[in-house]
Image 1 (cartoon, rainbow, N blue to C red):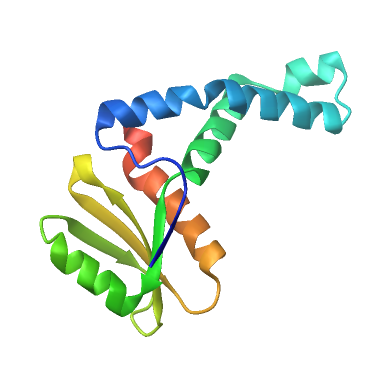
Image 2 (cartoon, rainbow, N blue to C red; image 1 turned 45 degrees about the horizontal axis):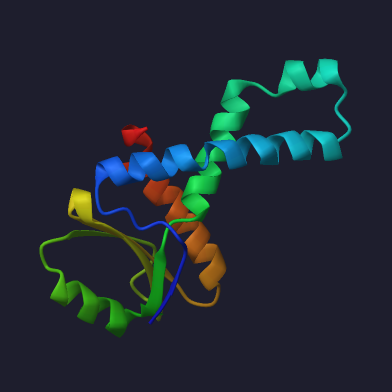
Length: 138
């Protein structure tokens, strides 16, 4: 089993703090991207809205969530040790690998199965975790 990511909030308050902490980085990313796209001041004011920066913050937060990666057997063994968590699995049962994200304050684990593309599965899982759990906190 491997793990990747930086954010593994233990509480809703910690998740909110982490979300707030990526706000300045999201603003910088959006500003630098607009500069690279050669937006002039007028175009920047028209196109770079609060919603654009919020979307960047959402994506940045989600991309930093800790995801564990292992075989089905490793995931099942892990889940047996944490039976108090509700497990929601996305994908097919007929593949060999699983990525999962633990949300302790929700007593929940989101998992996604995959065969050959761990990075794609992790990205999908992070977006799903954000949309299904974290978005309502923010």
